Amino acid sequence: MSYYLVKLILSAFVIVFISEISKSNTFFGSLLASLPTISLLAIIWLFYDTGDILKIRQLSIGIFWLTIPSLVFFITFPIFLKNDFNFIYSLILAVSLTIISYKIFLIILKNFGINI
Image (tube, rainbow, N blue to C red; front, side):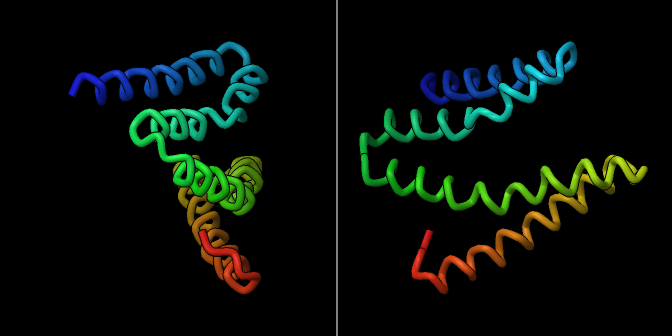
């Protein structure tokens, strides 16, 4: 149980740290957030939990491929905000479009024989 608490605290610390940095310096907040911090933590926790290199390899390959459609969020969200859409409405629309792009991208990958 204490192991899960350590994982939770360290993971939450990273998120809070990035959001606090972003309050005073959006460039450094963006830089830190653009690093694959969540992916790195997931890979580290998976290695520590299982030591299974095959699972870690599969996770990192899946992260690579799924990063591409996730860019839809980072393109559409600021466009919606720039066009004076409500924050929550912008968030919902951007997430919805991102989910659609995941589905389309997974179909495209499957057509090329790539299964995640």
